[in-house]
Length: 193
Image (cartoon, rainbow, N blue to C red; front, top):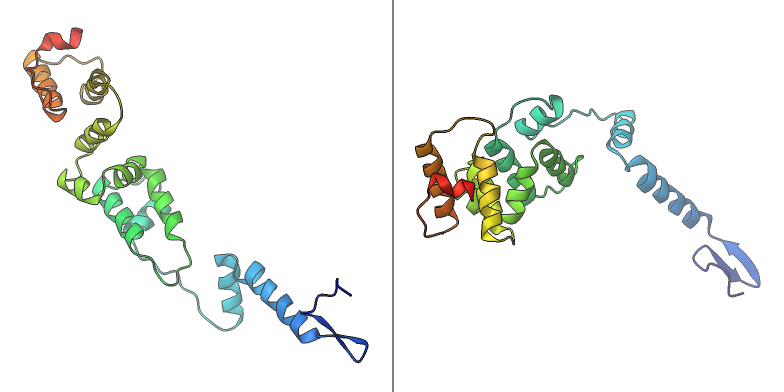
């Protein structure tokens, strides 16, 4: 009888013998894995039913701020440092996935994830967490023509529909040229090109 599952049923003295204990163990294991321990809510209620007290452990003030009040102001530095901490430390046991918490931070400020992935921690710290400088560095890494990079940086650093002094235009444009390592003196007329 090739179709018999030998794990649960075996043949002894020309009789089929069912191992009910093994079947019951598998049923219990299935319930534990697929129901009791599947979600935090189920696990917490199961532990409470068995006499354990459950308290929510907060391991991050930044995460608490973002979860409790999504409109709250959190600095880029705080978000980036917390994102790095979550990426670099993996706890042995946690009710909340670190990947979910990283996703929460990335949803609050997508630049955090992009800077971590593309620039790395050391580069962001060297840029002193300055968002404008980080964006400039990200633009420099893109596989675009130099002219396209200049246009993106100009778009990011010049306010729209606002009068700007000619000297300020030259200074900002020269900073863009220097960041792209272009050996050219900036002129206000360069914007017309």
